Length: 538
Image 1 (cartoon, rainbow, N blue to C red):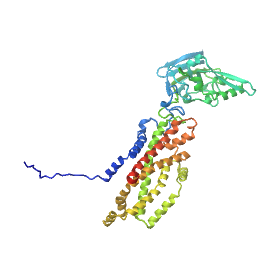
Image 2: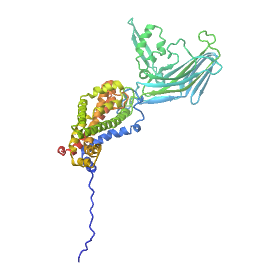
Image 3: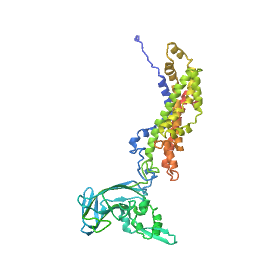
Image 4: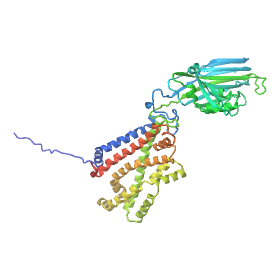
């Protein structure tokens, strides 16, 4: 039985791989290439999504915690964390009245105190809310105080004072004392016992440059920021100002001004903190210097916002100014990847154009002029020129990178010139010239694609060099002080005490970022080098 053979021939079609596909397959087989790309991706991806990974801006330098705060994941549980509390509603704790003074209070969303009449009055208010403090004593705090003092229409302007006090009621109840000792000029030792748990943050009278009266007169819209420790506020406490002997007062003031009131007087683990407001009122028609008749006063307490700054914060802690290091690192990685590749690409594009023109016009006056220019620019020192340009036109990141671009193309141009001189004698160049193609078309369409692998390799190897050069300029102190770069981080860490305070979280991340950045591009360059030169294959 014979087999029937189909007369329809079987058609086999095969598509030849393009040059790009072949190169891509070769590259993807290289473990060094994949490892380098992975390292660059680890650095680049967080930088790309920096705005989503951190709520802060590297330009605003927002204070987020205490100076040199350690990363939260590396801090023991008792290290202070950020505590922010707003005190809006206060209740009258105590009041004293003499004369025909009348006090009225309103405590809804905000607290209002109205005082009318002639005489004296003192109203002590305590916040309804409190802060429970579960950590060891913190070093720094910030208190935002907002209140308004006005006079109702048709009344006399009374004299008054508003004082804001920080209170640790548990510590005050125990009666603990902080002892301040000072040796006087006579050799006698003076001892002052300061009560723990209470500290005057602000009042209208003592904050004046020259306080002539014990009260203030006139409407006030107050929005003030008090920071602790506060050396000036220490010596304005009543137990200091009430010392009658000026020699003793001066000696004790010097000792007590160096006390950290937050750590030594206010905070203790597992205690409660409140805010007191002390309003004093005075209206006397018979007082010659402080005359007042039929006076009245209205005080509106909008907010007292307490921020105890944490000594443990975020992913990478804070720097010497309390700024988030994680934010600086993320935007530094973005700057390194984007600007490094951009600078290397621009420099090599200049190399391509200059090298093609010089090589195609070899042994002409144009080639001689370009060669002379390259030789001259090779002798220009890059770092001193960047310093001079920065001092002349300002220390701007783009100025620095412009100089780097203008001084980084000479080596590539020399190599491209030699290759162009070899390629211009090729048959495809002769064919294009015979068909009437212009010199520019031959260079850009026929010669430039032949040099593409070298350009890619050159970009890969020059990108870390550009970033390292910028970091060197920053370390010397001539870089852009506002640019969010790893170089600026290293500069600030070195000159602002990171080593002294053992702030490894500040100085190590940018250094590791620069090292990994260089390693990643070196691994990619090794892979490309092995493809271009198979003898290097191991």
